[in-house]
Length: 275
Image 1: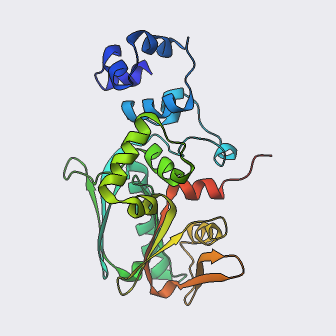
Image 2: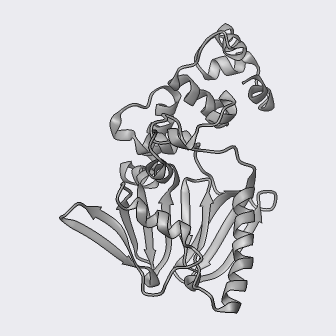
Image 3: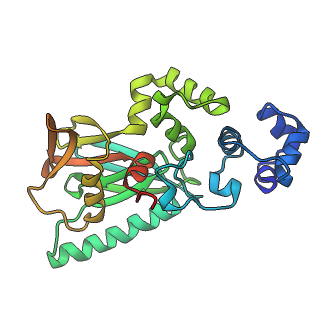
């Protein structure tokens, strides 16, 4: 914790003021003499601009993702902006260095696959604003990768914000985290706030958006697409919404330009259950 605090140029007194506690308490936190609770851990992550793994020094196992109270997030090296110009308009996303490397690798492989006529691939990427992107190259005009030193990257929230908004109806958020979520909801409205944490955005070739709640049943669709981004057959239909026996919706992937899947929720729903 001390290293994270010093990295931001904060004193123990500064951190204490932001956490609404005493300097003595911060000192005990840093020496490990006082154990942190879940609320304090989340608020410290917001204040110190770090992940839970960076703060506590241990990694959350995949088997714990479903039940962990914390967001699923790796410490990232920020890169900048992924800008995609499509026939349905432009989108831009904040990405880290790993995402940049992945995109460059896929574009290289895409060229080789098309040259050999072996498949009809899609592009896959993740962004820092809680999105997994599934992109149909058929509707892409240009892809730009722009470093943050050249152009300021799009804003995004802390991973714990997206996690809290996904569980908002449970009323479990508190402290600094709740205040930040309240401010976001006041600015963009309940619907938009919940959508970015819990809903899949499907954009079709005519620019129409469709929002579908991501649940246990439909995650299998996106898990399959994520795994098969280099081999998506023509005239494929993917289930994007299901309400048991009474309702199901399937998207014609030939007509889909891009899908944005809420990352934290997706990873929790697709994680293996603890033995």
